[in-house]
Amino acid sequence: MNWWQALVLGIVEGLTEYLPVSSTGHLLLVQRLMGIGASEASDAFAICIQAGAIAAVIGLYRQRLGEMWSGIRGNNPAGRALTVNLVAAFVPAAVLGFVLQKLVKKYLFGGDTWGMWPVVAAWFVGGVAILAVNAYRRRREEKDRPRFDLEGLTVQMSLIIGVSQCLALWPGTSRSLVTIVGGILVGLRMRAAVEFSFLLGLLTLGAATSYDALKHGREMLAVYGTGSLALGFVAAWLAAVLAVKWMVAYLNRHGLELFGWYRIALAIAVTAWLLLGIR
Image (tube, rainbow, N blue to C red; front, side):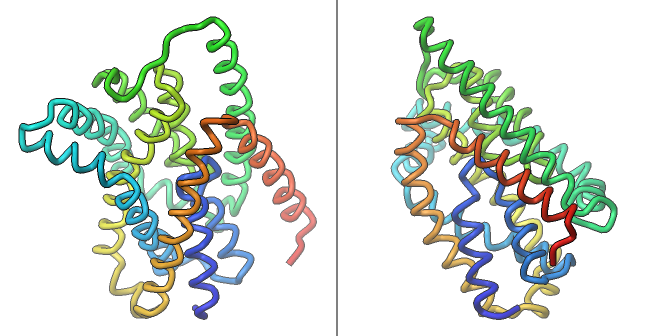
């Protein structure tokens, strides 16, 4: 891997990890465009540079994380409740992901069986779903139905968000998308749904990164070296800081509609590329 390839992958990871567009799908597409073949090492690299995006959210939400730590120590009931809710939301995808990981990687992750088609399908379906949810959200607001912040979230609601996160096992779906939509559907305000999605990502992405680093870390470092990994990490961190700050401000003003149209347009463009066999 050249240094510029590691830089590009890090930027793509950081920009797309928390946007509802699927970082996995974008990384698979960019790897293919740059001629990086699918392998355990390349898959592990794409997953491990997620640590940069994780670091960005830790820095941006350090106050909330401090409240959670205080809650764990018994000094902050709201922080303790949020921690319990995040753990409840984490469990469904963690269990299902562990059980299905080999099947998902074999059939859906850009391999020889289906190539990029599962990702393209998920981009298109996800785009349509965003537009539908956006229309539902507008109708709900017009009826003045009350929405709530994280303090009103229950364990049952968190489990619903956690079950929705299982959909993100299909590459191209977007973990951020399904958890934000899940939060909106259970009644969270947009800002609260986004924040819960980001915090849940710390658990989900942290577990996935740690697992792949332990399982394929040596192979990854042997193929790409520590320099490429460090460059990818830093690029992902800086790009994620910018993306998260922009996304929070944008979604609170405009909603998800832009990302729906983007996903549909990207699915159509990549479909044309695949059908025409452009290299």
